[in-house]
Amino acid sequence: MDFKPANNIQDLQYFGEFGGVNPSISDSSTYTFLEAKTMFDTFEGNTDGCYLYSRHTSPSNLYLGEALAAMEGTETANVAGSGMGAITPTILQICGAGDHIVSSRTIYGGTYAFLKNFTPRMGIETSFVNITKLDIVEAAINKNTKMIYCETVSNPLLEVADIKGLSALAKKYDLQLVVDNTFSPLSISPAQLGADVVIHSLTKFINGSSDTMGGVVCASADFINSQKSVIDGASMLLGSSMDSLRSSSILKNMRTLHIRMKQHSKNATYLAEKFEADGLKTVYPGLKSHPSHEIFKSIMNKEYGYGGMLTIDAGSLEKANALMELMQERNLGYLAVSLGFYKTLFSAPSTSTSSEIPEDEQVEMGLTDGLIRFSIGLDNDIERTYEMMKTCMLEVDVLKEKVLA
Image 1 (spheres, rainbow, N blue to C red):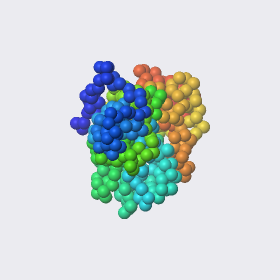
Image 2 (image 1 turned 135 degrees about the horizontal axis):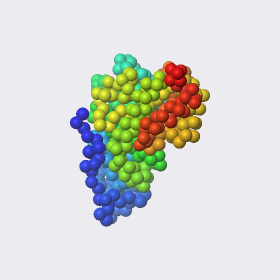
Image 3 (image 1 turned 90 degrees about the vertical axis):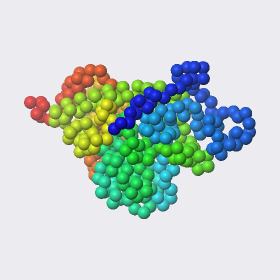
Image 4 (image 1 turned 30 degrees about the vertical axis):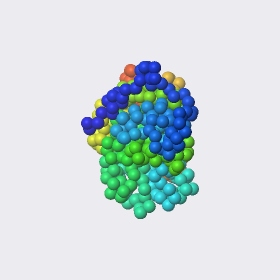
């Protein structure tokens, strides 16, 4: 691909109001007008460059949105106070009573719960399918379908969506393809592959320091403007706004995203190859054994690698918990949800981030009790990290007998 997302971010230039190299933070919830008519025009959405109220937008939020739109290659973007604050208004902006969604069966637990348990109250139904099988996706589409929803790399099973194939289906049936790209910023650019809307939880890799929640919707100007409408915009009316201080902080951290993603990917690739060679059941898109390895390889921005997420199966929840507790004790990372931190984070999704999914559905999709999801950190000496992790695995008896021999 010729698309260079980090260059697009780098080429943006901002000056603070006093000439600062960082844009000034708009530390105001409301904005003054010199003329009453300008306020009226702004409420009507007819005046560019005028700010009304921070729930609608702010200069700081627009700066961050512009950088994220440049990263994904969309016309514009709208930031929100959390990942779910980006996901839920997007779904509700597109779908209403009587509409239908085709969604990947393996998605973040919060998104699953929203589609499975909450949107039916509004008359919106969802079919959960194996998103990697295009024939199954197409068979699930009906006359009421408005959207195909997926994650580029799914949480937690790391299934890879064929964005090009899904885009062709969406266009064939006049649907919106909405893609959550939280696990693979920079590595994959869904909008360049045909996605209509790209969502991120900024809380994760993009911010990178586990100190701020945030979300973003990257899309066409028409779609973003519809979300921000004071008349019927889901983002505006549901109030999923981001604070200007937080958006300013995330914008600063975005400047190192390309460096961080390369290191996350390098370290995850090293560990995944070692774990698989040791006989562990390891899932990572960079492994040739991954069912969608070739798809990922064909759509990736190669310089950023295959991402920082991998899973192993410890065999049982008891062993998974014991291993995670021991690794935390040995300072190899934190037993914590979320991802994208400088330290490695690990958790058992079946009892944490995917616990909203019923047990029978977890079994059907292949989510086992012993599965451990790793967000691999920025360790400088990844070889040492591997040796220490291997020692922990041997102590907990996670590695196969051939390793012990």
